[in-house]
Image 1 (tube, rainbow, N blue to C red):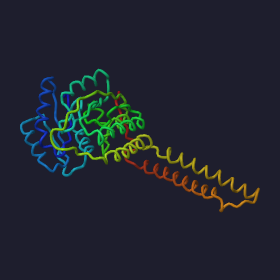
Image 2 (cartoon, rainbow, N blue to C red):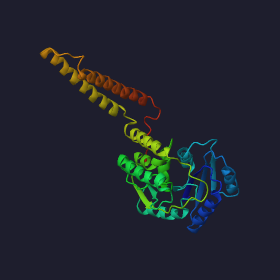
Image 3 (cartoon, rainbow, N blue to C red):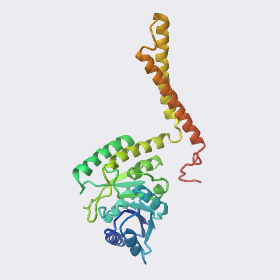
Image 4 (cartoon, rainbow, N blue to C red):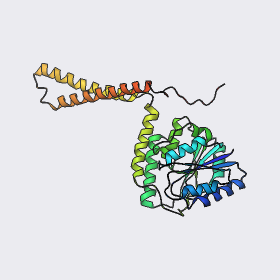
Length: 310
């Protein structure tokens, strides 16, 4: 199979029939073998009824229904698990992503020998102050923190080699940082292609301003887990030792000054600074030690992604 198209949907009953027709037309024009995987993320409207109708007699349509709303990341994760195509495309269900971009995304992926190619909505049809400007800031900060230079990290329209989606786990709200997850799994050939962004035809956006705060917290989590998840002592132990040593030096100075010049200790600010730093240093060191103990007992502590064997 050439292409798997994974589409999370939440209260998008109106757009799905038109979206599927659009996808089918593009797939037939380019003679692709394909599957469309809809994930109903606990919709409150008739989204699942529409999906059932669309899948009736259509072997290219597969679907998953969540009992309640979990979010886009779990929906993508479940879709990735069952995707069979050589290439896996993700797109939103609101008709703002154009299926006609798929052939060009495949071409860019092949010619550039990329692991994944992310769409770049150069011209956006969203509110300038609530979406466009915050998105630019978000992409700038994410690029600097992750080292991945993409203009539109959170674009829903992306294409992956199948091996990429089988090697990552998307949870929480990590869908915004799938390129970061892919890079952490060893897939660092990441490309970008400008794509057309359509105006929303039905319904309203399902994402609020809180996504930017949550996004920053999720990025911090990813960067910490990918770098120190298997070696927490390297972070906590290092900084704990540095802070403790700083407190020890201050304490040594206070003791020497007491002996040499008979100056007081407990009535000096340096005493409380030394006490605080030594306590914090000890706590950080112990946090790293406990983290190592937990990591050693983790059942997947020695699970590694193997690309090939001979």
